[in-house]
Image 1 (cartoon, rainbow, N blue to C red):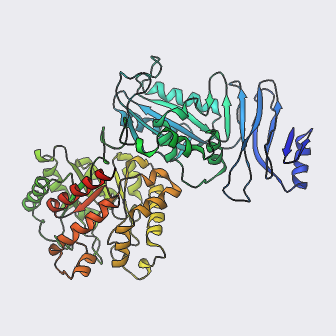
Image 2: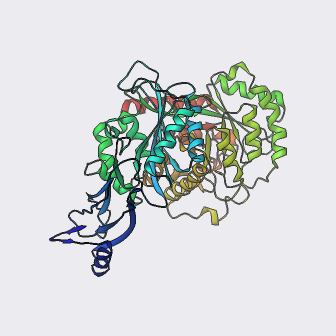
Length: 564
């Protein structure tokens, strides 16, 4: 074994000698990472050297050789050089470690692509792969063999105790179980699962190459891969993954050389959100969500649509004015509102869902249910709702996360502290940096949703205008949407790319600014707020007056198109 430091190299004949040297020399840190050969059982310890120009550790048994790679990073002056490892092996060799972090790419272009993804995720979880993060969902034109349907692509990040070749075997079995057969290379397939990264290791064998050999020439692979990372390096594995790109600035530089973010929406690569067995291109324009409240006490239209006939008539009006989405709520969430039970909410909601889901006018439109109850979400989706809009982001009924995950529908995660009774308390209005803290709290909630089984590609975020914010804080959010995306980017690029729902319509802070006590008189102020929000990056606006706000959104889209 050799440790090469800046200015000298030392030869160690045993691992114990290396360990003793590490104890003597503060420039070396002993680490528990080990590789083993199933034949010889030899164990190779890896060391990390702080002042190293390069590090090389070799040990050979009958079937395996391990070598260290040089990786330079500048996260901080006190940061260790990372030791990433080459693993040249036969299939009998394995990584001896309790758990490894892995990245797996997914692709599908045959049959129900969304269903294929959902099935593959479920099978991976049952096979010993714990999924911790998901990339966004991309629709891409086929590469190499172009005469075939468009693909869906994404990637997941997770942990497993499976060795690399056992992991490969599991993924191949999942492909087979989902109907993949041998055929044209790069041709159509119901599911394609590739190991992009396995811990800190480079693996080269007859059956497996990690990192995947063509990873850095495929934008449809690199885009979802980057989604699994943050702009800050969060652990040693991520540092090594960046090093494998061979670029000074790691994977980010590889992505930029391929074309970067401008590729999205052009050249056959777009981010999409699955709705049923189809996908929704939410980024091509600003979408308008029309609001209808089946409540006696909502702040704007409370009591107007308690009768079924009046509610149905309002839905028709919203659609005729150009609404893309109808959002129906049966529980008031205005400040100080008392809470209904799930059964009471369903009594109001089910009759209109029975009618609206059968209306011809709803063809091509999306239906959202505004609820924080898991029971209501379950019943509404089974009645035909496409989206669950939860003002609490899973905080008021944590069971909703599992239910929505099982239902397989998009989930709107809104920011709110407390509940409608307490959200405007002095405690809940305390912020040092409102945009930064909203972003951080939103990320925590959407990550909880991910871990509960809702892939991030099915999540929409809402910063919660009017919920746990005073007038100045609402204004900071309206002008600070780009800042919220930047804060999210630090932890998750996928989170920073999510569609933003923006709901300032007729809110009290607009009445305070414009001295308008009657909420209906706040429509001009709503148009101004919607305009600022869309120009700041909102993708969906939730409003009461669809006609006026749709016109404002169209002008904003034209202005943004002019800029691009």
